[in-house]
Amino acid sequence: MHIIDRTYIDGKFIEPHGDEWAPLFNPATEEQIGSVRLADAQDADRAVAAAKRAFSTFSNTAKEERIDMLNRLHAAVLARTDDLACAMREEYGAPSNFIGFSAPRAGMVFLEMARTLKDYEFRRRMGSADVEMRPSGVAVAITPWNSNYSFICGKLSAAIAAGATMVIKPSEMSALQTQVITECLHAAGLPSGIFNIVTGYGNVVGAALTTHRDVSKITFTGSTATGRRIVQTAAATMKRVTMELGGKCPTVILDDADLEVVIPQVLAAGFRNSGQACIAGTRILAPESRLNEIEERLSHTVKEFRAGYPADDQVQVGPMVSQKQWDRVQSYIRLGQEEGARLLAGGEGRPEGLHRGWFVKPTIFTGVRNDMRIAREEIFGPVLSLIPYRDEEDAIAIANDTDYGLQAHVFSSDVERAKRVANQIEAGRVFINDAPHDPLAPFGGFKQSGIGREFGVFGLEAFLEPRAVLS
View 1: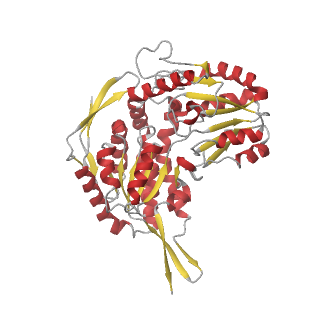
View 2 (view 1 turned 90 degrees about the vertical axis):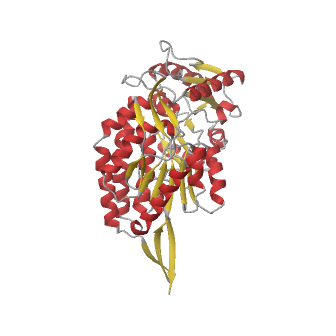
View 3 (view 1 turned 90 degrees about the horizontal axis):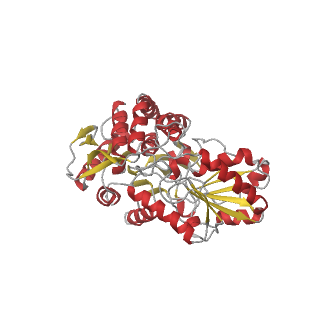
């Protein structure tokens, strides 16, 4: 059993003031694997105080010093890639393909931000003014359970590059992963107080941090509903916010696409991170002229996307994170049938041969209208909706007919045509023909998918404020 009874404040692992405990589970077995002692509002206040003390010095460090810190963080995290992978596998149940990307990526974000920082000019002349980009102050990062250490490292890397100090509140459901990544970050030997990590409930620690008068910036990744509440709270003291929220991402298959190549990529986008991802391509838009062919290929290829234990390298879909999340996904599978959609693959219950664990059958609905709830609401599980369209104009209209606008995919044999369609889709990122991730490209959403951007220069500037001196 893992007993996690320390929090991280002012450069030290200390006993929290909070005395409430939360259980930790292995979602592939449903067994309790440990407990975490949660921080409380007093711990949140101590963490902010530490970050505030550190800010006066850290905010005035030279660019070269911060680049050195980022490189040290990169090395410290990279050294424990295997430990991070093991923690994610045990506590979250992610499949090997996702872990294989996430664990190395956690360290790489520091190196990528160091490269961004190297070329960034903090001072510039604009008209008659000398303009300096200054760190915004003490920042709070609230991170979710579906990619724990990636979010922690991504947000922290930008804050350090900017010269801002940070208090991080991870999900209590990811405490084992948080423990390992905190040990990595501590090993880098940064000055005390630059970053502080307090695990606790959102309505306790999160509320204390987002209302704190000494916090000037909040960066949050999570649901749109929670993000909306944080923005309302932040408005009272005009805190700056970056919100990376929900998605209902369209995957547009144009009528000239090579389906033999495209269909596996479409399913990989839809079932990414076992469907527990805001960027999952959960709405598949298919031309009516090829609908039958696409249905047939989807129903055949989905058999390759097995749900099962994360230790099996052949498994593509892991368990849901909790019983609550499993119940939620099951309710949407029932809802889709009640709404009149037809199951092309999957359905309710666990996959065949799995009698324990919060596993969901990889599920595809066909006969879906874009006004159905399964096509409009974020399910956060391996459940996809196949929606037919008449022509290119209709495809774009359906893709944009959503409250969200985080990410999209366009597949076509004609790249220029795909770009023309991509340019009309209201989303923060659009991938053409399974293009690879680019760490320098901005990430964030339109509409109710969020405010602001992360990664690269845009992520760095999210923690900066311009100050003009006119003479």
